[in-house]
Each structure stands twice: as C-alpha cells, then as structure tokens.
Amino acid sequence: MTVRFDASLVRRLRHRSALLTPAQMGRADAAAMALGHAGPDLMEAAGRAVARAVMREMGRTTVLVLAGPGNNGGDGYVAARLLAEQGWPVGIAALAHPRPNTDAALAATRWTGPMRPFTPAEASRAGLVIDAVFGAGLSRPVDGPVADTLRAARRVVAIDVPSGLDGATGKPMGYAPQADMTVTFFRLKPGHLLLPGRALCGRIELADIGIPDAVLDAIAPTAFANLPGLWHLPVLRPDGHKYSRGHATVIGGAHMTGAARLAAEASRRAGAGMVTIAARGSATVYRAGEPGLIVTEDPVGTLLSDPRRAVWVCGPGLGPADAATIFPALAASGRLVVGDADVFSAFAGQPDALRGAAVLTPHEGEFARVFGSPSDRLEAARAAAARTGAVVLLKGADTVIAAPDGRTAVNLSAPPWLATAGAGDVLAGIIGGLLAQGMPAWEAASAGAYLHGAAAQAAGPGMIAEDLLPALVRVVSESTNHATDTAAPL
Image 1 (cartoon, rainbow, N blue to C red):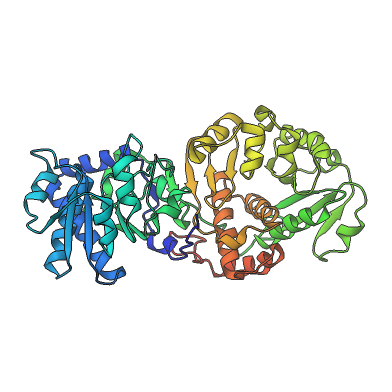
Image 2 (cartoon, rainbow, N blue to C red):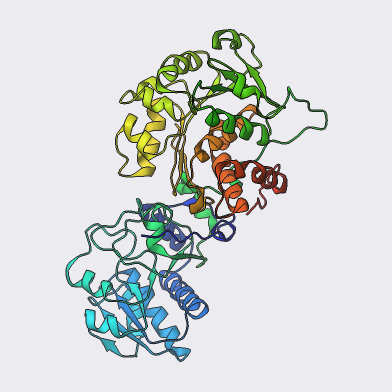
C-alpha cells in the first residue's frame, strides 16, 4: 500500500487540528442539533460537500452511489440528487432501505433517479463509485457481498471514511476499499491520519457543514493533528545571549560517532545557545567536526555538576552498554533527558526503567522491544507516556506524540523520503534544542516532529540525513509561528 503524501493537508487543516473519535463526532452532531442545526440540514450540507468535491476533483463520468441504511447512506442520497441535477449520470444501489422516520429516510424520498442492484457487476460498470455504505463508527467487519461489491469498483470516493475503516484507529475491519478521495465533515478522526487509514483515504477533504466550533468545548478533545497552532517556537529576546538560549549536551558514543554529531548539529540549528558532545572514549573524531561544537571528555558526573546543562540527549550511537549506565544517572539527576536509539535496547522489556526522561523517541521496533507491539498506535503511545511519565514520540510515517496527561498529536509533515539512516538522530537533536530554549516537553516534541518533516520537504527527494541540517535552518527562519497561531513553513 502506498501512502500518498499530501503536502497541502497541513495548510488545509489550519485552525481545525482537533481529531474526534466516532463517538465524539456523534456527540458533536447531537450538540449541533441541540443548538438548532436540524439533522436534515446537516445531511443536506454533507451531501452537497460530497457532490462539490466530486465535481471539482473528478472528471464527469457515470456514478454509482452505494448507499447503506444509516446517515452515511443518507449523505449519499443527497450527493446523488445534487450530481444528477448538474447533469451527471447517477444511479443508487441500496444495501438496505433507510430506517423509517430518520433523516436518511427523508433524503431517500427525494431521490427520483434510477435504483441499481447492489452487486459487484454493477459497481464494476460505473466510472466512479461513491462509497456511502458505512461510516467511521462501524462495529463489525465488512465482508461477503458488501466487500465484493466495493472491491469491484474502479474508482472510489468515500463519504466519512472508506467503509470498513475504523475511524478511531485507522485499521481496516475486514475489507476497506482504496479511495481516490475521502470527504469528511467538521473535524478529522484519528483513523484519517493513522496508517493504513491515511493511505486508504486517498486525498482527504474536510468540509464545513455548519456545525459550530463551540460544540468542541464540551467534548474537550485530546487528540490533534500536529499543526503549528498546537505550539509556538521560542521567542528570541532582544537582550538574549547564548546562555539564555540554553545548553544541550549530547552523549557521544565511542564507535558510531556520526549519530551524536547529527544530533548535536540539529540541536544547534534548532536554536540551542550552546551544544556540547560529551565523548565516551577518544574525542578526536568529534573535535574534527564543526568548529562551533563544544567537545569534552569529562565524565558525565562532573558535567552534571554544572546546572546550566539542563538538557541531555542520550542514545544516538551510544551503544546499549553505555546507555544502561548513563541513562539512569541522567534520569535521576532531574535534568530534561531525550532518550533515543540504544536506550531502548538497553532497557528492553523494562518500561519502568525509562521513568525520569522528558521525551522518549522510539521507532516501532524499539517501542515493541520495551512496551510490546503497538496494535493501536495512538493508545499505545498514550499508555506508554502515562506509564513512564515521559512524552513518547512513536516514530513512523504516522508519527504519534503522546503526553502523560493524555494529549496526543499525529504528525502530517513528514514525506516518505525522510525514511533514511540518521534522520532519527536529527529529530532527537531538534527536540533537545527546543527543550533547551524552554519549550515544554510535549510542545517541543510536537514542534520537533513538524519541523523535521518540513525540513525533509525542503531538502527534497534523494536527501540524506545531513541535508536536513541546512534545510532546518531555512524552515525555522521562514516560520512565522514564533509568537502567534499563524502559518508555519508549509
């Protein structure tokens, strides 16, 4: 399955970062109706949004709407009627009639066009199938004739989510079709952004259907798309100096020296006023690097006596043996520690040993080594954060950032070419640099993931980890998110 990277999605979601579970979206619908927004009006607006997206993004062709018996099907009836009014050749295949006295039943009475059989043969004949069978709150797998009919479609536009996709987790329940486009309403759900859901949705269109933003106050969502409005980069003071911008220390391993060098350089370019590599063994190779980098061979215990060394990055290229002794000392010191890479090998199967870190940055394999395989990435990261007391950044194409208080964010900015050796070391360094400047841990991890992906976009396909460093300078300098909830680099 190919993830279709959509660089414009961050921009199109601006000021709409909250992610709602299917249950929370049901509460939003109910709250909107309690405020006087009638259910039929919301359904009409939803169907209109689907019809407009189809007319804008898809070439005119024959359309078959596969309609389920619930509200998702009702949206499909509205979309079919409006497309037909614009001269599109449209038919509806109903899995079952809408339940009597529902908004969907009312929408169905307004459809006067042709009804088709709900069969694979019918779906295969259409130039475009609109999937209005089941929405995001489906509780049973899609299989049998429904799956066969969806599978036969050549092109699919899904309403809410592709049928069979769990809106909370992004996991298919039975069969879920590959959509060319998914049109959803008010706010995205986690399943739109978590893999494989993000890939199955195709291009994601988020439509305003009249639900007021005020309904979010009672829902109090805790999951978000990682947009710049969630955090603000450090504000540089006119009277600032290198010490006021913070001091980050990166533990440098004796053998895989490149990892610590990447992390240290990323901390510097993310804005830390001073960055030191604390070398294990010979420091010669580190001193041959960038001239602005401070290198020391002093023991960690000696360095911890300096209170200005508030932030430490531990793990990149360090080796499990050194990580097993150094990380506990750092965690016990009360300093802000970013734990990465070999820290997770050192404490495999020992999640409680990671308590005391500020931020942990495992990829999925490292996460599984410590916490077990994450079948639901959002909930797994949230549980790991609660257990360790650290912000957990679970890396991947759908990176999740979870705070101990339950807040989570799903990152959108990372292009597929960011998957290259050394990129994780750069990310750990960026987060360390932001922590050194005083950003809270969840905000620093979220901003770090966003800037990391934005730098990869700026570097372009074919980049290597070293290319992220100059690109990061451009991304940070072009950001207007230092003091206001305004656009950032993308």
